[in-house]
Length: 68
Image 1: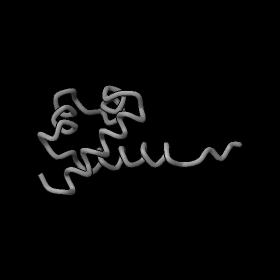
Image 2: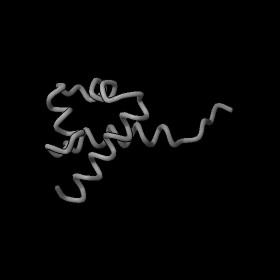
Image 3: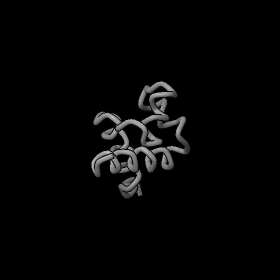
C-alpha cells in the first residue's frame, strides 16, 4: 500500500468516527458493505470520490460554527 492509499484509508476512518460509525459513512458513499469493508480495512484502495466525500465530512466538522 502506498502512502496516498494510507491517507485515503485514514480519511475514511476519521470520517466514519465523525459521522458516528462506519455504516453511516458507507450509506453516504452508496457503497456495498463488502466494497466499503475492503476500502476501510485497507484491502483495496478507496476510490478518489470516496476519499473526497471523507475529506468533505472532516472539513465540515473542523469548521467553526458561524451561527453564533
